[in-house]
Length: 331
Image (cartoon, rainbow, N blue to C red; front, side, top):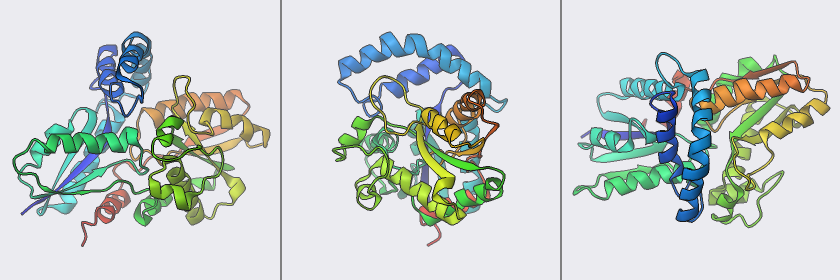
């Protein structure tokens, strides 16, 4: 009997063209978990505001990072899946599915159709309804139509798992000595996403992580990831900060904002920073273009001297071993 491992990542356009990006954004932003608005308002926003104006801008951004192998998120995720399969054969079958775009979760489940058990691992360290919740919901909706549903194990998050923290530390340890300050930048989410899971008032600074992380508070989990990595690296509290990137629209998103925190760092006399993105396990548009190009330009325009971006875990051996630990495949 083979055990299936379903790795899920968010997804990417098939090409860096406006039409391909528009198709991707249409699927992505139609998701009620991503844009948390009533359906009529969500579709008006998508079809009359976002798609007509954002598609070409996003395509231009993708063109800046596109490689001959395609989208970085795509080929890093595929390499990870391949290497994990090589390490786990012959008793496990590994399949990769993207929540939006290709290869789809549906295609991945077809690859795993002969498995009696499946471990579902969304590759998002911190839980959010928009990413993790949507990926799990999609998987369950596809499986509920099957005559024979496999035994399932779903890993909701791994933001504080020691093997994930150690993998991040392994990447960062050789880099931190060359920088004055470490900025941990996570993907942001609208504040109302946290209201729906029980955070009546979204924290602006510190978060009672021992309480909120247990109810799936994305912000609290991000802060805990930062603190655990910083502790292992031996960083002092004034040597690192946490912020949130990638916001759009006019509704409030969780704070502090990555692009706004740069002003504070400059005022402190800091000139050389390393940006780490622990909510992404594979380099992608948000790490390479948003941080590595646009945020770097902003930093230099403010008078900063250097902004470096730490690579994501991608398909590193220590990350592959961490996945085996997180999914408890070594038991």
